[in-house]
Length: 132
Image (cartoon, rainbow, N blue to C red; front, side, top):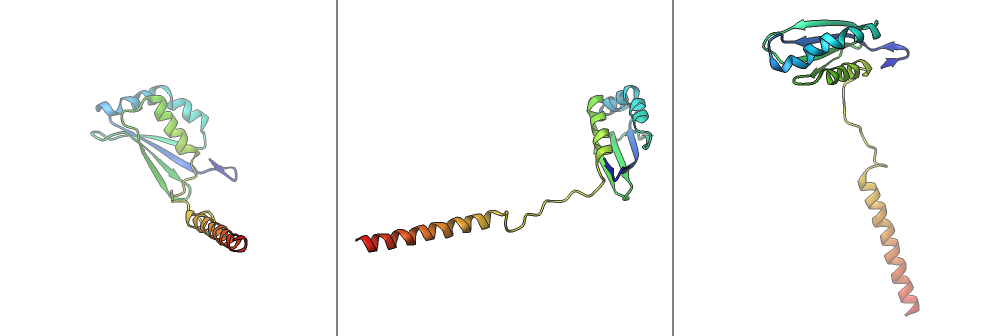
């Protein structure tokens, strides 16, 4: 993804094994889709790396010096292309949990319900006492 018009992924490293069966999909990806992917993304440096005896993976290096590694063992070439595109579209920020404030948490809504139920009980008791 581009942040202010600048693509954040600088380098994509395609690591594979020329012998292992788990690299079959990434080898097919390199034969069919990699050249077109390079042509569509001239801002991106794409490097292939032969690592024997290891499962294949894609490693993305971003401008903010973060890296993301995606294991692509036993995937089809289209799935490898999908993961490469997702790495390209990512901003490279670290993944973190979304923090919820107290206004949106379950505890506040439960206490509001209990407060409303308490008013309802008090008003019912007062109504019964005055009418009874």
